[in-house]
Amino acid sequence: MLKKIIPPDITSVEKADVYVDCLPHSSLSHYLFNWCQDFEEALHVEAVTDESYFRKRITFVTEFCQKFPDTDDVLIQKMLKAEALSYAFLGDTKKAESLFEVLAKRFPDNAWIYIWWGDIYLVMSPPQCDKAEKVYRLGLRSCTTEREKIYHQLKELKEEYSCP
Image (cartoon, rainbow, N blue to C red):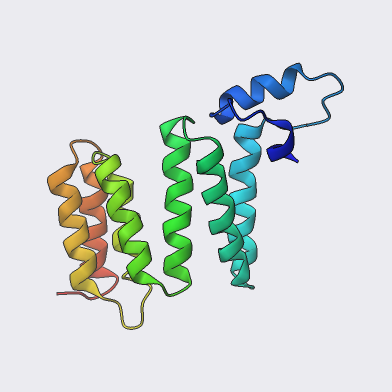
């Protein structure tokens, strides 16, 4: 429905919210900015028991980012992170890595990108501590903010996962 009612020249979800608000008889009860995040998270919840929802989540994120490329960076980061993590959960680590590399180049000062990226190696069996540590250390070299969160991940790596 959204693809049909939002004109092609609207390229951010924030502007789409303004547009939809101005429509006569608009029946949307939530802002699109919030709804799209809720929907992405709901797809993740369903994917825990049915992995086909990871593919649906990937499709949703891809279409969202194509339709709304000028959306606030924080939301774009969240969506792109969801896509990368979905590939990781599906076992396509190479694709997840390449998406996290693109995210890290686009938003190099976001500590959470490196944390999410490194964490994909810790859910593997057995955990790949060396790869996780390498990504966390890359984050320490790249980030100037929230570095303490990356240090926390390194500490957890040694304590919780018994990594050397």
